[in-house]
Image (cartoon, rainbow, N blue to C red; front, side):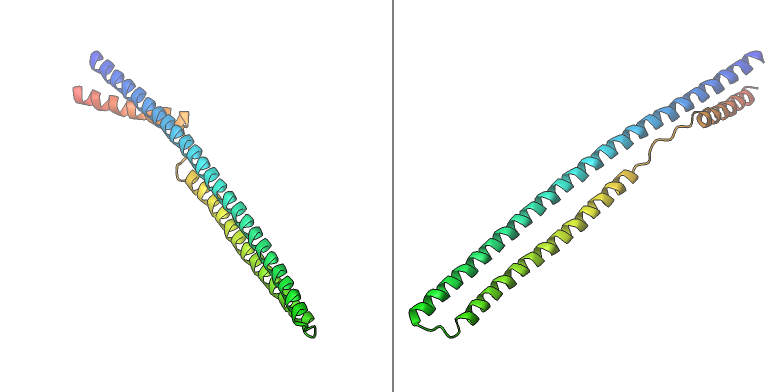
Length: 171
């Protein structure tokens, strides 16, 4: 009988040790997955932010080039109008023509600025989306939890149950 009890206690202790080791291994693996996920999420966020910043700079340069082109075109049209009015000898409506050309240039510049503002608003929304996606990716993998006392208690109870089952099976 003594040998049966010793075997049952030994089996219970082995079961408890094995269960505690599995819980520790699972917590370590979960920790590695959590860290890898956090690293990958941060890299994805950085990459997306860089792309959005690049697009922002490109859109601003594009708008600046369009504005300069619009201003240049308005100045060329005014110059042509002055030369044409001087060559034709008509000075009566010259101010009205110049004001109309200046107005067209201003309307074009305002539309370029408005379009740039809309693109910047879209980019800002994309930045917000990138930050929420980053947080969502982080939250998709749970951080490791390893409460030593709970693991030992659970492993001990499981080991005791195994030991008692073995004892009753051998008795």
